[in-house]
Each structure stands twice: as structure tokens, then as C-alpha cells.
Amino acid sequence: MNKQNKGLMTEGVIWKELLFFSIPLLLGNLFQQLYNAVDSVIVGNYIGSQALAAVGSSFPVIFLLVSFFMGLSVGAGVVVSRYFGARNIKELQYSIHTFLAFAIVAGIVMIFVGYFLSPTILRLIGTPDDVMNDSILYMKIYFIGILSVMIYNTGSGILRAVGDSKNPLYFLIISSITNIILDLLFVVKFKMGIAGVAWATLIAQTLSAILTILLLVRTKHEYKVTLKNIRFHKKQMLEIIRIGLPSGIQNSVVSFSNVIVQSNINAFGSLAMAGCGAYTKIDGFAILPVMSYSMALTTFVGQNMGARKFDRVKQGAKSGIFMSVLTTVCISALLLIFGKQVLSIFSSDDQVIYYGLYMLRVLAPGYIFLSLTHAFNGIIRGAGVTTIPMIVMIACWCGMRVAWILCSVPIFHDIGTVFMGWPLTWTASALWLFIYYKKENWLKQSM
Image 1 (cartoon, helix red, strand yellow):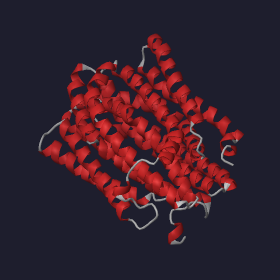
Image 2 (cartoon, one colour):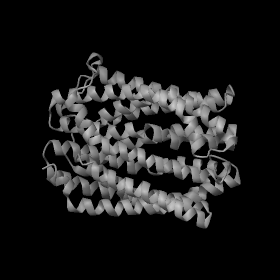
Image 3 (cartoon, helix red, strand yellow):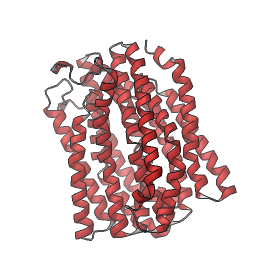
Image 4 (cartoon, helix red, strand yellow):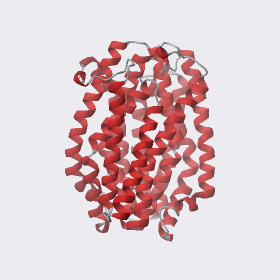
């Protein structure tokens, strides 16, 4: 592939294009999860179970507050990939600079929203008093650096949309290593406690944001960023909102349901919170291939839609679904066999391991339906159709999940009932999206 066509997925062997694009995404997501996992390992072993519970209870709230922007980023990625696939350089430039302008404004707003509202949200979800102070401290420091998170995700989203999944990987490797070193320095040596973990994460995320922007500013390719050109362009902003708004709404509503789930887990005490928080880190690693294939499919479909190669879109969709399911089945089997040994890395407390293992045994068999849901989502969103995934995810992952918890938990009084909300709703969303996918309405709308 010549330099001009670098990053294009509109030609070549389909399964190889998807695989080679997915591998750097997978490794990049792996190192991103390493941030959280290393934090939890160090917190659990050097600070204690209560601090581990504080970190674990913070993430649903963090995702609740940033999820709307992340949903809009999906729309921006689709817009960028389409212009890139169509070789429309002028519109590509406008969309990239509009995306960055939005990220900067959203990041500044989130600093104030997250810093001042996170204590209130933590109280609303019933965070126990023995972990409240640590949770508030961790979240306040995290949101001081949220602009870096926004900028990195925007920059890496632009790079992925133009077919570059390698450079975001390199930057995450650097920032992850930095995070590990700073964790050990701040927590183990300087005894800074949970504040040390938060500051290490903030500094590492800022580093990855700086590296990403430097690459975009210095590149000679058509997606080069010129800082003075970062501004809103009406047409591109409206396109990003049209495609991304349903995903933003979906993410916000679904993350709100996860906060409700977390509040029910909190009711079983800090050891349950610690065990579930530990398994959540493992869960983050387990679904990495699913997320990577989904992002690859979105870029693949978006670029080929822009190039009007609809038969290639359908062939790529089938290949991506097969690869995602096969990988997920293998990971689920490994988790069910070695789950206890992996959980023991995070804590030596028998009760913490018990709750984490309980969660694993309920969730792992349902991962195949999670993989199908994300694969169908990636395909349909890549075609620019985001309303249907929004409806499905809100109905299943929010409405159905919350209804299950509200009806079943008071009857059975078992934390396993809370866990069952995940696989049940993954199954429902996979079946619903499969029916829509087979009808090919998503493809017809773009022809």
C-alpha cells in the first residue's frame, strides 16, 4: 500500500485488514486497562481492602460523567473515517479540528462538573462511610486531569478513524509504564495512599495526551492538526451530533444503570465492593478483544461506506463477527479455569476472592452474547446508523437491567441476583441487534 493510501481499509484481504488493525487496538486497550489493574493491585496489597473498594466504586461514577462525550466521539470517528475513505481532504480537516474543539470545551466543563458533583453522586449511590473519604479524594484528583483524558481519546479516535491503530498503542505503552513507576514511587515509597494512585494516573494520562497531539501536529499526512485552526465548523459539528448524539445518550443512560447496579453491590458491604471491584478489572481485560473488534469494524465499515464498497462491507461484517465470537469463547474458558488464581493477585482476603469469583462464574458464560452485541454495534454504527443501537442498549442494558434488579433483589437477597442482570441483558440486546442486522436496514440507508 502506497503512502497516499496508508490507513485505508478499502482494499486488501478483509480478515487480515481487520486482524492487523485490531491487534494494536487490543494491545492499546490492554495497556489502558493496565492503568486500572495496577492501581487496584497496588491499592489492594499496599493500602487495603477499603481503599480497593473506594477505587472500585469510583469507576461507575467516572464513566457516568464522561460517557456522553465518549458517545459523541463515536459519531466523530464515523464522520472522520467516511471523509478519509472518500478522500475528501477539505471536509476531513474541518471534521478533525471541530472534534478537537469540542473535546477541549467538554474537558473544561467536566473538570468543574466532576470535581464538585462527584461527592454528591457517591452519596446518592450509597457508598459506605468507611470508604467515602477515599472515594471522594480519588475522584477529585482524577477529574482535575480529565481534560487530558478527553484530548487523548479524541486524538486516538482521529488516528483510528484514518486507519492508524499503532501510534495510540505506543503512547499507551509509554504512559502505562509511567503509571506503574509513579504508583510504586508515590504509594510504596512516599506512602501517599490513594492520593498517590490518583496523581500517578493523572500524570500518565497527561503524558499520553501530549504525545498524541504532538503526532497530529507534526504529521505530514492529510489528517495533520494545525492548532490555530481548532474551531467549530457548523456542518461537521451537526454531523457529529447527528451520528454521535444517540450514542452519547445511550452511554449516559446505560452508565446510569451501572451506577444503580453499583449501589446494590454497595449494600453488601466493603468486602463485596472490593471483590467486585477486583473482578471488574479482570472483566476489563476479558472484553478487550470484543471492544477492539468492534472499533475495527466501525472504522472498516465507515471507510468502505465512504468508498461505496457495499459488498466488502457485508463480507467484513461476517468476518468480524466470527473473529470476535471465537476469541471470546476462548477467553471465557480460561477465566472459568484460572479465575481464582487471577483474583488472588488483587487481594489475599478470602472474602474478597469469594465475591470476585462469584461474579466471574455468573458473567463469563454470557460473554459470547456481549461479543455479539458489540460486533453488531460496531457494524451498524460504522454505517452511520446510531439510533437503533441506542434504542436497543437503553431498553436492554438500562430498562431491563434496572427492572430485573428492582424486582429480583428484594425477593432473593443475594448478590448473585445483581450479577445476573448483566448476562440476561447482554443476551436480549444480542438477539435484538441480530434481527436488525439480518434485515440489512443499516446498509440500505447508506446506499
